[in-house]
Length: 149
Image 1 (cartoon, rainbow, N blue to C red):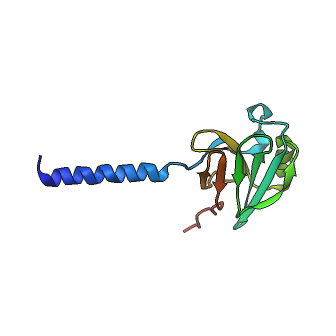
Image 2: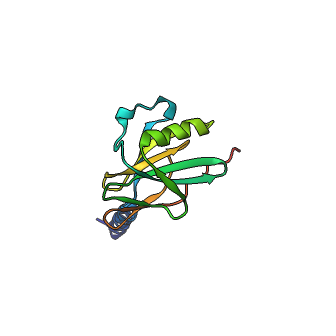
Image 3: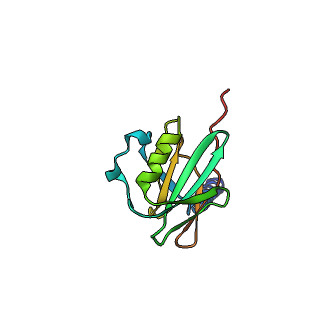
């Protein structure tokens, strides 16, 4: 094998390793529904818990994140407003159904290990979340939708 081909393979392997390890530790979202008006409470985890409520508004697009209070995992969201506690998930969803004119989707917030951390209620399922420690997920800004051309 020529030296140039070996060098290219080594560089590609190193880039792949850096990419994979650099992306490790990020959380993800899984969609439950694109419209909370159609929600079925049987699809929800953790009904009956006290939820810490985080909210944000980015360019007129509001998002609400719910962190179940009685589990060993925590969402940290320093750029979001901590707006109180909601006694149950269905009460949180009902208050959003009444106050919003947009379709709001419901998403599960999962850590990189696939563990459940909470819910995101928002028109778009886009957040950046990175694990810190064993049981903490740091959620950054809720990005606004792209501007029309």
